[in-house]
Length: 240
Image (cartoon, rainbow, N blue to C red; front, side):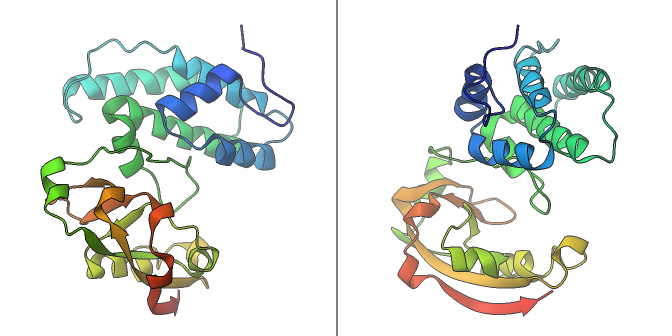
C-alpha cells in the first residue's frame, strides 16, 4: 500500500521523503519541483518508484565498491527497476524516463558506496537529483593537514556567481577548477553560449566535509553557506 502524500503539491509520501532526505541526502524540494514541472499529469509514478526502491533486497553482501558482489547487486537492482518501469510504458526518450534513469543511477551508487559515492558519481553536466552533503565524511588525517583558512577554486556558471548560492564541490587546485570552468563542458550542446567563470574564494577548515589528499581532482566538499562571500572573486570569464 502506498503511503499517503502530504499534499497535492508534494510528489512524495512522508515515508518516501524521509528515505530520500535522511538516507540518501537528496534535496526533496529540488526533486519535487523537477517532477512537477516535467511530469505534472502522472507524477505519482515517482512516489511508487521510491517506495519500490526502498523495498529492494539485494541478493549479495556489499563489499568493496568495485567487487564482483557489488556488480551482481547492480545488475539485480537494474533488472528490478526496469521491470518496474515496464509496467508504465514510458517512452525511452521522454522526460519521465530521463528523471527515472537519473534516480536509478543515484540509487545504485548510494547502495554501492553510500552518500559520498552517490555525490561523486553524479552526472554534473546534466540535471541530476541534488545531493546535499551535510556532515563530515572526510579523511581526518588529510583534512588536518589543511590550513585553518583554505583558498579554494571552482569552475561554474556566471549565473551561480551572481546568485551567491554556490555548489559544494570546489578544488584546492586552480588548474583543475579552470578545466571545469572552460574545458570539460565545451562540447556539450547545453553549454553553448553560456557564461562560464573561474572562481576563487576562502573557507575555514571547520566547514570542510570531505577532502582526500590523494584525490585526482583535489576536490574539497564544503558547507557552501560558510564561504567568505566578500572574498569570492572571478579570476576569469568566458562564453563557451
